[in-house]
Length: 426
Image (cartoon, rainbow, N blue to C red):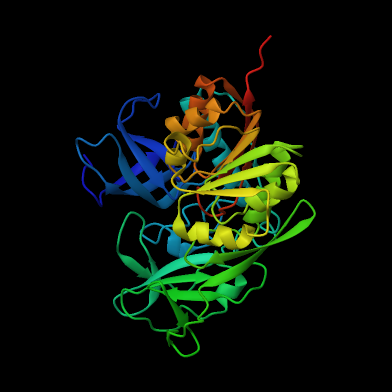
């Protein structure tokens, strides 16, 4: 019986599961029941494959495997757009073997399954394509990439669930400006971490090596006091142009279209908020805060809360001239629950864009305690979103509109924008 890492097994592939893999079973009966659960990457539902076990153990609740040979292919299978992210390769391109339409169907199925399993919500989900991705074949969308130099000084990325560095010749998901920098043709100091930012708006790219600005032309760290460590991000939302200054090492949406798509979706979900007080939680560098400031108008207010010091510095620069914006520094849970001196006591609407782990029960309860008329939740993880929706339901809020966007082609990640409102009472 196959039990060891490296053993080969022939598998009938079942449904997709959250995390970029599909479910199969070793030793199942004729009806597909029982047996050992195996999470299999680089395959598709309905396929028959030969797979190499990558994680096993008699006490493990499930095993992992990589499909290395396709015996019966799905109609959604295409030649990999990034072979280096295939079996045994780097992480970050686990759906490169799936058609773009198939990727969106995959992600829709995952979002729907998480909603049903964790929030007990039955919902048809459509994952929307982002402008320009079809024309580019789902490539060239990343405005930010992280690389690491291997022992010989070649730039690469870590393998999936591994610290081993795989040298690369290219990074197909990176935008054109990054591709033109020649990062994979030069030699780096072994072990160096290389961060590259090339905004879609045409600002000059910034390269950081181990957190320090790097001069590619001279091939060394740029030690000048005025060396560039930030970039300008230009976003067009609701007929207005916004310019943000963002630290190159700070957080910003990585897809070239994501800032405009998400900010537009948030404003659409909120509707008319003229004169309202809107609470913007996990507000970052102010991506949503600035358009919200215009949406609420001079008689309204936006109260933004952010805990990351670098994001707060960026936000203060980006929002300094907006008199109807109030910035609160600190962890969202602490500000909402413990900071009685600067406590937030009112919000007509709440926008939240929490990290991948979600907001959590205590933050959801604090939001519901303000009794906002609308809540707009931006989520990068469908499981965290579903758990938090269940918490909102306990507090008397129900899910209205739900939009999902394919902001991470070739990966299993998906971004959702959910709208909630108090349950109507008779």
